[in-house]
Figure 1: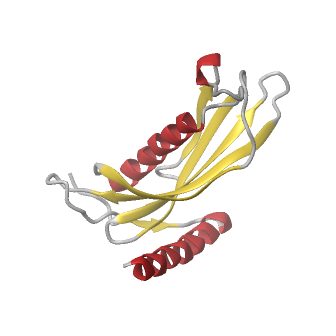
Figure 2: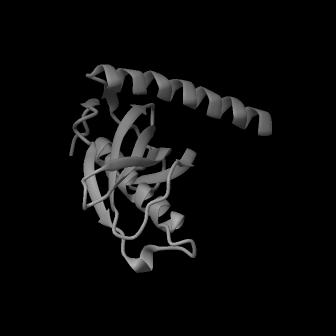
Figure 3: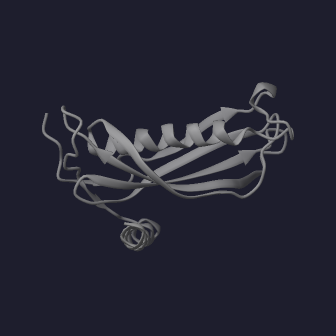
Length: 161
């Protein structure tokens, strides 16, 4: 199978992965357990990474996961994810989560995060991934911001090494 050299953002995006919150999903404060949200974020982001790269991918890092508001029993979580940018073998995937009140249809933004994945070959080593073609103004903005975040990550890792 030949892997394309370039792909659009929309070719791999996840628009509305839904998850209904039940009582067993709650923590001791009666809000959704953060670990459940984090795990689902990683799974949804991995779908985007593997669709884009057409390879097995591994999570390398998570930047700035921000829990902005709680979600409660009965809310419907809506996960949205898209590739922001790719480099030689790595990709940044942006994910946001909305909580929808099923009674009113009101949606509120509750979590955002940036994941870095690496595409791997049959031996589990880093492998080339397609370049990202941003098409909309929002995709272009996210593409440029991903480059700035990557530079900050690299600067921070140089300081700690």
